[in-house]
Amino acid sequence: MIHQTKAFHLAIMALFIAIVIIQNFVPLLGYIPIGPLSLTIIQITVIIAAVLLGPTDGAIIGGVWGFLSCLRAFTAPTSPVEPLIFTNPLISILPRILVGLAAGYLVIFFKKINLKQSLYLALIGLIGALINTVLILGLIYIFYRTPSVAHAYGVSSPKYIAALLVAVIASNGIPEAVLSAIATPLITLPILRYWQRND
Image 1 (cartoon, rainbow, N blue to C red):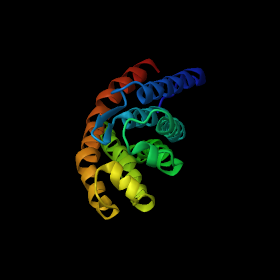
Image 2: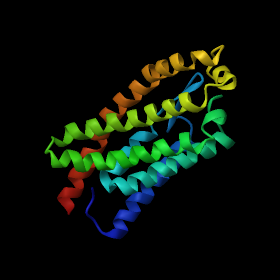
Image 3: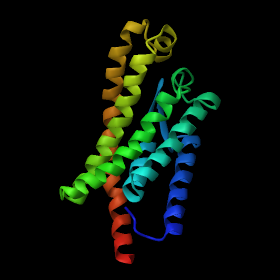
């Protein structure tokens, strides 16, 4: 977490919020459409923000991402599934808040057990992405085993949704987690080293 002035802290937080806004609305910067699904990369921004700013600000930035996801589902969905599912704040907002919150607290935990910085940043990237995927798909399974959602996913019956969601974890969730595990330390370490030199 950064230890600069309050004004600097707020400026960095505003920068992350601006990046999340851009990623939500500029094609391919935050979501990469693949058929009826989207490969999400915005969680990397939220995770890095939580690592640098702490769990509270991470949760706020995650909440901004979630709110924009909900808004986009109403106004400019990128897949047939979004208007059916992501208009529900429990699915579009809550998991994204928890990504930022968990990432921030994981930093505190891993520092206490003296884990190597590059390793714990990779783990935080991996865990943060999995939290997003597992919570969203778990909530979809709980609330949206319906014919309309099954049709949007391209399956013939709601009874196939569970198998489909497992396939989504394999095809989307795992690549997102691996990408987050690689990108989080690659981006965060140089920033942390620069700030440490200038503290």
